[in-house]
Image 1: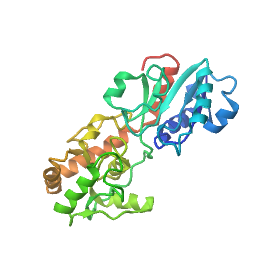
Image 2: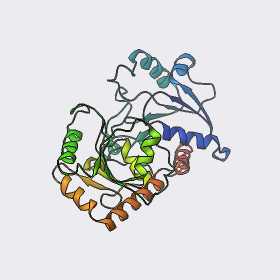
Image 3: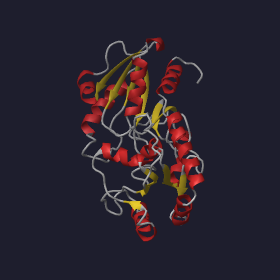
Image 4: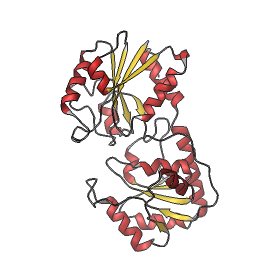
Length: 303
């Protein structure tokens, strides 16, 4: 079986690419994997001998800097004209938004979706869940964590993401937890990852979707993730569901201060939840399981 994948830009595409890489490196799957960029796909079309075509375009058609309507129309034409098995790869940050709503058949076609909501799963033919772009290896679990609380929202407008949650959370922290909280922006990824390993609690809030990059980094670093309750609405990882109060602690804008105070002063509960979250991260990202799941679908086997 020959699978050809077309890739474009997008923040949540790396997990699926890693799954395809795993399949490519293991001949026992019986699938030959080839890839091409969107630009090459537009020029050259579908390679001869392709049995399965998986297709990923930049997921936000409203972003005119990255979404080129003319180019996408041409590449969509190649995709629709293909007569074999077709798969859409949806890398949208928001778990209930359809990156292919421009296609009438989007909800019917088999789809790979990043951190979908239950609502999205009910209305779409999701055959494989993807994940945020994060390496699956965990960081060393350092015992010394001198930073009590970390909050790295950066300098954005209060309504930059279409909601004021980050601005309100920042104000709460400044009002009641200023001495415990490190707000300083860390421009280097390496320095940021090292800081996560020295942090007890990471405060996260939604961005364009119901999570942001700090959620994964907190879990893999062994910090306790303190996240807005909207995280409860999505499945962040393909092979493990995060459980509120077991793997992380959720908040809303009414109980934020009380919950943060409690977890700051309950060392036993803090250790229990952060360790559970770290283990759930390790379970949730699994290229082998995802490769098996995709292969079974393509071969018509029960998953």
